[in-house]
Length: 422
Image (tube, rainbow, N blue to C red; front, side, top):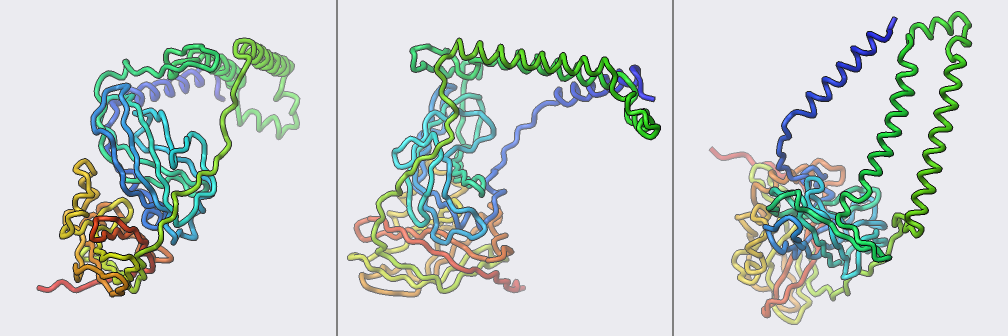
């Protein structure tokens, strides 16, 4: 039978394990969480572009602004919930930075946004405040209800200083000044948690003090259910119920008295219209897309029609945060900020079968080759094993005046295996 000595040994062992595991030194993990997202989501849902980080180094309490645009690809996967309800957020390894402000198309985005339109573009801006010193990977994130997080490209941001210096002062609508929001009310919450924790422990120990399971099972087999719950058990249960009700009522009364005007947690959503739609001046029709597995290369054959008034050239192909640049086009090269994460700009760039400008009114079949180990490093090649085996991305064209025109390209993709020549 399990008695008091056995109970003491069990609790002692549990406490020992807690001390051992909590005493282990934390291990710094530098992972790219976006790589865990399925490739068909990264290549066919949200395409982030024109991203910039205001700084790569800041002090505790300093701010960094992440801004740019995103396009909801027209070829949105059937297996992914539509962006009927989304929330703009940030991705980082824990609460190492605090989100201060966020906007979609210059509208405050502290609430969820509803009914985002597929095939349209949106501006965004996120202002983050340094909280914990260290080197952190900072991403924009669009949380889609029913689909989860869709993470954008990330850049390393270094926070310097001391975590003890972090402050989040707030002035309420009534003029009350809170020195630090992160510690405001924490002591009260901890006291309540401690109180309920003590009640829970007392309740558990009350039942654990006597033999369990086997003895109670034998009592049931003997038809002596009356032995399982004693008069003392009933009295303790009644006292515990009364005590909990008193704590809740007194706590509620005191809170309402101290804070007579309360704002409930915001759970509503707002509609944010997309950016004005530009005329589709360059039409792209996919003819064939294949992925050369040994060569780690995506090859696109597309029919491109220039409906603009000036000649255009392909400057960039972007998908899943990767930017393949046509290095023969100076305006496309200049569009890449030196501060943009270099691992997301493959050195091999974009290779075209012909870099001759596409004249106004001209339609031409073009072959676009984006080869790089980044396809493997970003874990994107598994889109070949998806049930629909489709790819998607954005093509950036530039006219003779340097104006950028954006077109979508998407469709089925097939793997290609070539024998290695000896």
